[in-house]
Image (tube, rainbow, N blue to C red; front, side):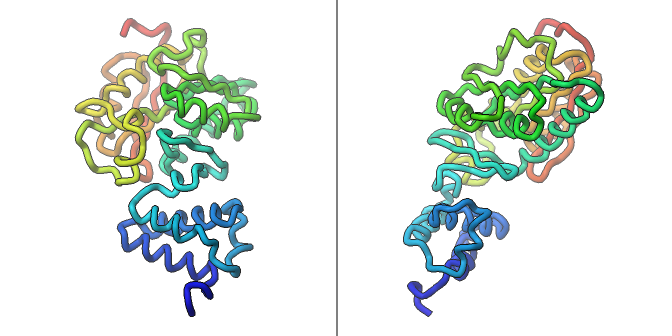
Length: 292
């Protein structure tokens, strides 16, 4: 069978094998080829099966060749899917990662529990919101929540506002270190995926190190610069008993909780491993926040 006679299903198998041979995991290769094929067919990935018996779209192999250079599939197509929802991207905007799903699902469960316990409109703040990954997803899954997000990058903030349309999430462009002074002491939940990679550490994949914006990755020699800042901001924003969920590196499972406990602002601070990284849960113990 010639390439011209191949079906899209056969091309997907061939492309996934090529990507795996280039060092991409089998699961990622299958997901990426479906995303690229759906974009080439101008359908959503969930509707791709209806195209599999048909011919290979002309652009598909062009997209695969770009992916073989380790350019992320999401950057090739200009959007990403996170927990079933599409997020539009732009050049210089951080691509949502699967590991962030765990912290997001935790946040959804906590907001739903607050509503059941009598807080009808819990207040949640997303610091370092990127393209709105967590803020928009929380607003979609818990419509009763009052969701605020802040992002320093102008390009990412614009993308986040586009992604937030129709959800009720409020996204602003600004510095998370002095975010939302009008909300001081009132938040029930703060979530954040700040920069946390130490300068010079090369453990992440090329898709991250070579294509994600440096502003979203690097955080000083220890990787703790922005985490320290988010500790102070979250302590200021949260009401007593409020919870912070913070994504960090798998190599920081001990250092991040210790950093939080040393401040005296948290009654509980512990981290657990996620699929690729770590997640801190910290509970605010008193207000107002002591001087930083």
